[in-house]
Every structure is written in C-alpha cells, then in structure tokens.
Length: 330
Image (tube, rainbow, N blue to C red):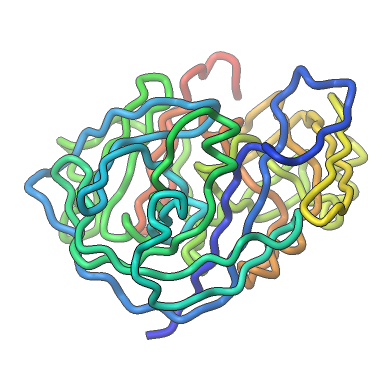
C-alpha cells in the first residue's frame, strides 16, 4: 500500500543566525519536511491496559516522554507533525538502511534521512513489533534544548487509539476504544468537553477548521510546534489586523535570509469556541503545504493546546478540549 510520509519537525533555531532586538519572546522553530515516499503498514500495537497513563516532562514547549527502541532507552518527543516513528541519526546512524530519502526544508536542504526497521518499541505497557522508522538529524533539538532526544513519536503510532494530553499535570493518556470507536465513559479524563469538533486526517496530518479574526481557514495541529504559525501569503487580510510583538531576521541553511514576525490577533474560533489574545509567528508555509500535498493556512501549536486538556480520537476523527481557564474565555 502506498501512502504519503511527510514530516514536519519544529525544532529550536540552533545554528541559525538570529539578528533582532526583540529577543524576549520565544523564537520560531526550524522546519524540516520530507517528501513523498512509499511505506508498508506496520503491525498492530498491543498492551494490557484500558487507558495507559504516561507522565511526561516539558522541555521548552515540547512534550517529552520516555520510551525504548530495541535496547536503547531515552527521551522521545510527542509530535503530531510527524506521521510515524522518527529516530535521531546521532544514535541510529548504523541502523540498517532500507531506503534513502530526499529531503528539504523552508530554511534550506537538510541532511539526507533514510528509512530503517526496528525490532521493538515500548512505552510502558504499549508495545510495537517490527516497526518501520525514519532516521534523520535531530541535533538541533538536542543542542537548542540541552536534552538528549532519541526520536519523535508521530501520528501513525496512535491511529488505533485516542490520546489525551494534560499539559498542566504533565500526563499523556493513551486510550483503547470500544467497538464504536469511543473512549469508554469510565476512561474519560473530563466529563463535558468545551470543544468537540471533527477533523480531517490528511496524509497523517490533523487539520482543524476554524477562524482567526473571522477569516476562515484550516489549521494543521502539531504538538511538536512550540508556537502557532500563520501563513502570510494566504492570510494577508488577517495579517493586516494583527499587532506586531517582535521582528527577527533569520539566516537559514545555505545563507538564505528570512523575515519572521511574532504578532497577536484578537479572536480564534475552533469548534465554535472563542479564544482571545492569541499569538502566532507570521511566516511562509508554502513549502510545508507543498510537502504535505495540501495547503497549510496556519498551524496550531503549544500556544493553543496549552490552554486546555485535549483529546485526539484518531478512529472517529474527533478533537475535544476541556478549557483550563473558562472565565477568561467565551
């Protein structure tokens, strides 16, 4: 079976020259995308649990959990911008090469990744055997955040489950689903969701429909994105209404220079719920959309999902959120 395997890795800007006066605000992450390729379906996950409770640590705005690949145990980033398991070339450069892959990114060409296979992945009681994985350079994350990172846990690992993330309590819940694709009532983390909305799952990327300052758009949802992102070219009317917080000049790989603006906008609506006082980085997402095979109007990252407990049901294609501070939001 052929499918599209496209990665978005939002990682700190180590090795990129930042020339700006306003450095008090979080800096944008570097984007790397991997182009179309063929993949084989992985075996079914297994484990003796109804809801698996996985504690995590926050490193910057990244969600970091512990897992084991074969005999190697360590840190992995929960990243819904990555379709599958991604391994750090620093530690897996000697893994068997099944296939080399072409890669590119909005900041220039990235080191060529390759496809491999592992015998076993485990995260507490959750297990996977004979998984395919992509191996690429994640040193930017390690150097930028001063943490050893073995890899990324992408969406395809969870397509049989629902996952719930509570950023305040630093807990990831992985739910097995009933015959109708629902989280059993006794296993639900919150009673009544403030947001419940369907999403599109296109090429292993979650897309949520919403509006920003009444402008309709589709948002890619990425737990590996440390900030919200707005595409300038597709949202010029919206950008004109935003208030600039800071500006930065980036020199990317190959010497290309980029303007990056961090700005605020008043109103974000997802699933008929209104969020006020929103921040986003205004940039060019054309290359990202080209790699995904679908246009990317904007991206929702940590600035959005840190506002509540959220659940992604990959079987029913539903997104839910329980807002932490309801009194401050409509």
